[in-house]
Image (tube, rainbow, N blue to C red):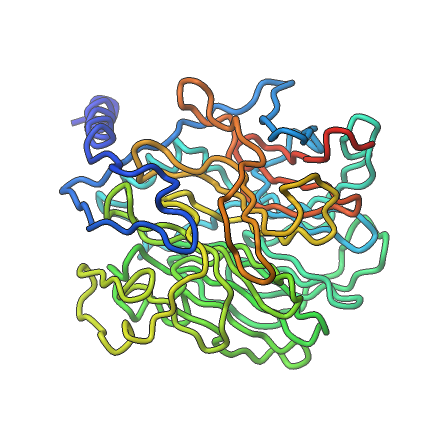
Length: 441
């Protein structure tokens, strides 16, 4: 059969798959907080596929801020902006990036084909721009005054961290170091490899970075190569983990493991405790498993793939490892099932009104494996002292239109030097700036 005749049939099959599955029995809020509800798994022959079609924003469209907040377009017309880093002089670095091409041995099969359709519909199959863009200044209407290409020719860059006069960039396969001088608008010097990071299939490709307060260590996130190790544990070597990297030597060690897809990282209110936002596993039903944020213990194991939220065993994983399940640490705070919680930023330095004073901002990229959809917004999780506690508050919504289509999908979050919240939107190709409604820009 010719491809042109086969395609309509394939599309019909894909539509049928998308219509199948199950429906959440609990509100998404039941899967949030320090003690989320964790019902029995609800597996189906065909998993729930409920992806929001990416349509983008109108030229003047804006997300909806919470009461007491205002939002402006800090930058539009970017190319899949995923992550943000604010330099000490106030310049904002934006990683315009997407997944690297998969190696031949990691492609093929009906599941990969179906996943490709889902990702394309969600706006996640665009080629990677492989660059870092610099945004500088602030106009009276809340936009960046200038934009320039800061670094290019990278390999799916994501995390960024400045230590002294060295800028570290996490590509999909390695951490690179570049010389940096305050105020420069472009780096042309070649990067120096600090250390390799697990790559290959790259089911989860994003590699984030954060530096210790003294600049002696970097911490790098590496997501899993699968949903629940269906490709074998050999492919998960060094993955589903956070690595600690010695800046001086490039030597690294596993800092924490069993974290399916850790992405966002932030130092907590004490300035000493590392926190991360983690995407949990799929295909256990619309109510499981909640994504979460947690403080990270040195040497800690967080369950993946053998269990979730402590000792809740995932029976799909063979052979089981009851010895590791017994060690699994319960995360601090659940962020809702399938919300794809990626961005994480501590509120220190924010100039926003109550209740957005003492807690973590979280960018929720949005679900594909839940009916109804979850995420597609930015939330704030309040802290009591050094503990995540209380009900999460919406900060920025409106990323889904009335038809359930995605105008945008929030990813990275960061606080600018004026204390406003910046939000990277990789489907809307924009950076949004959230400030107090009564504050000067």
